[in-house]
Length: 303
Image (cartoon, rainbow, N blue to C red):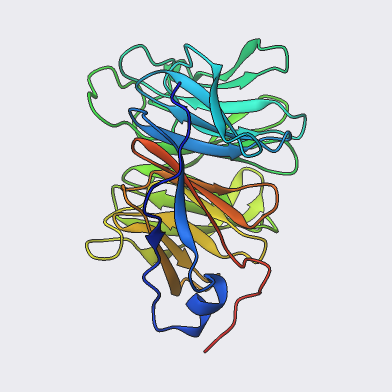
């Protein structure tokens, strides 16, 4: 794997004339490229060891970036075209393994010893489309999206949907009326589930009435042309601000859906997550992994 290197001319942020932006994004901070040379990066996840794990989907690799050494190494080969990643409360890596070119079309878990367990592959005898992104709740249940990009000839499901896998292994379809669900994230208190409908060019919010019961669907943000051009992956900070990837970079929204900032990136980003410090935002973008430190400790403020 290529050794990470510092982007030679750090990209200045284009600060918006907005007090919330100035508060969240310190003046003079820049996006830093920390690893590069990949085919298509995705799925950043902070590990219990402080490292950032991410995927190179076409290369079928799960990679590990060590912030202390600045090196990226291979964590798992033959990843089944893994996309979204997240660690469960037991420190095990859960992955959405996609379709196309040998993809496994399943939700998997990599044990500490390197062994891989399949968690979900089908519902009612029909194979999943292409698990894409996920979030894990405090009960150990997994919400994950299941769109299909590219060739659709072998699709068995009647919808591109969102599923919930309970901690005891029961798989339930919880959303089936979005065009192409992609990124997914829970609010910090787990009362709201956000889903990026890439097909519908919007982010939709749901009230979590129960682990497998979502109510009150509503548009959280338009992500149409000129407003992100569709959203891929998302994350949240401790105050419930939503960070969504789009055409120009990472779009940041208050919990009420108002946009407060844009962090431009040199390449179109696919996903983002915070490190364990809750301040360093790691961004996967095509060939590279980037990061930036934000003032997330400051709560949202109205103008």
